[in-house]
Length: 380
Image (tube, rainbow, N blue to C red; front, side, top):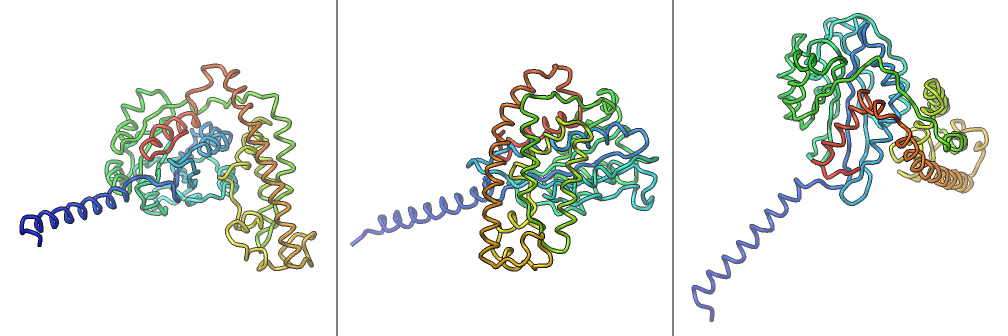
């Protein structure tokens, strides 16, 4: 028979074991997990009269920024989900009672939509209320509640950070509550941005403050691999099978955004092609290949009249075989583009002048993302 002291010791050991298990469960909840881990970025752009250069940089550098995000890896080697939102502010053409701001797009993984909205932006006016637009984006966007996700706001402009009826300090408190890091990009001299509170606006949430030359043109370095990647992009487009009421128009939008990227030069078009070969470029709302990865029912439920001519009248079995064929072709093309891009990046880095690697929107954003990614166990 056990003594009283041995029974007490046994009970203590069991209690200690239970406490350890509870602590493990609690700590596990806070440790970054690769499952469904996300990167959410809201880009807040000043579209007042003086900001034509900033908008031009955003248009020309979108795909370079996306490509940097696609390199991110979770702790177990998986890829995080990527969503981008877009706001404009400081434009006199916007509603005064709403702080001269507008949500151009909510958080989305529809990169063609972001590109379309970005290319539609124009400058006019204005009154730039930084605190107001930050606060509004925090309220309106569907920010993740997970502490594992990297959530960042990038606000760019050139007027004092203190303007408007909503204090940037108030917005910063709200951002901290949501776990969102605010990064500020002043379009002008670094010290002037410090004096006008842009640095303070970043410091309050542990974000990065940067200054850029907004009128600086993006310089693209052509590489020996560009022509092949461009040719592969044409073949890649042929693997998309539209479906649904908006399918055909979304397929046309894809081609339009190819043209928009090309308007900044062939090298920029190559950046977009690289993005399209990555996991971040998802079009399950209108493309059967992507949709079938989420649910096989997408193939069977698609209405015949909403499919491209080559698929009309197909049986379910024929549809499945056709989608698989296109999926296999796409995978092969995407793998080749990614492989070529590794060599391309090495060539571009070796041939880019040092003074062209800094002081632009993409460089500022990429630097800030890399620094904060470490806190979420994301690596590049």
